[in-house]
Amino acid sequence: MREYLLLGGQRCVLVLLVGMLVTGPRNLRADDEAYAEVRKSPPGLGAVQTNEEDWPTFRHDPARHGATPRAVGNALAGRWRVKVGGGLTQPVVADGRVHLASRDTHTVLTLELATGLVQWTFTAGGRVDSPPTVHNGLVLFGSADGWVYCLRSTDGQLVWRFLAAAHDRRIVSFDQLESVWPVHGSVLVREGIAYVAAGRSTYLDGGIRLYALDPASGHILHRTTLSGPFPDGGKTVARDVSFFIRGANSDVLASEGDAIYMRQKWLTPSLEERPPQVLSSKGECDVGLHLFATSGFLDGSWYNRAFWMYARRWPGFQLANQAPKSGKKLAERGLDSPPVFDGIIAAAGRLLVACEDGSLICLSGDERDSAISSTAHTHSTGGFDHAPVCPNRFDPMRGSPVDHCSRDDSPACGRRGWAGYPA
Image (tube, rainbow, N blue to C red; front, side):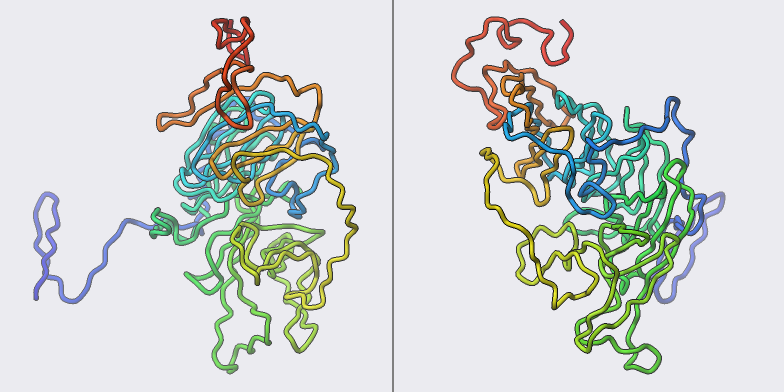
């Protein structure tokens, strides 16, 4: 069987093909810093420091401890409820704004913390599986399209984007196009440096590429690739001991002390890998004291062999959890939809809850907020529609009107000027 390729131009050329020929677009290479698309910094970009009231990154801090020293009151009064849809990530809060991602719609959105009004949205080229990180007025996040994005927090304007994937090459994953080397949404920021990882496993597609970037410009400060090791029967590569595998799958990066962690992988801030110290014949290794999950931080599936551990040992056979248990219930609030996995945060005296039905709920711990007006927002295919609803007709926990409205001066009864809308 003969195949022919017709090449156009000023003259047409008919070429006989023998065997197999694969053609494609020119590759974009992450190794070339030219593919960090740095835009001129938008006017007004400046340092905005987060404070103790904020929750600026996934699980609050670089160590991913998921805790805050700031207290939330017990009232849990409903302030607002926004219907977003698309499968929500955990939210983050900084500088009076709420940032989160709608995973399946590739969308990062920012809301006003006080009212729940959507301030801006940004659509990336692939899924965003975890919330962005806010740093000095910048919103940083990765995407399954293999790129890292940096936006201005005030209006969502693109500052720069960086191709972390080895090439701009796509595959189909869970019914959507993704990069062969996807990037998790949450970017690790440690001491003014942003760390990202692109790839799925150290055993696949040339391994996982890690970068340390300047958050303001996207320029590369450090880089490395974690690949293999590939067993060869013990000839040149030592065999793995019983329960410890030296390779790893990708995960959201964490930092504790002077180290960067990706599951059991232990690296220096300049991305030099530290070899683990074998502690026993079972394969336990010293991987540095940090929080990690055997199935990854983002795995919400129920599986009896997945563990979360705060330990130095991997796999941690002798780890015991001894913590005080008072059993005292401080507050309770019913929800119409369960929260997404790891979808509750505490910031600025409020609880924010991302729910499985695609809604984001803000609860206040201040009893004085129990009568605060609520604002309803609904997500549509054309964008976010802001619809003020009478406070006496809207239950923020149910997202639907009650039977009647008794206030003649409410906006739903004919007057405007409520919840930030001009009179």
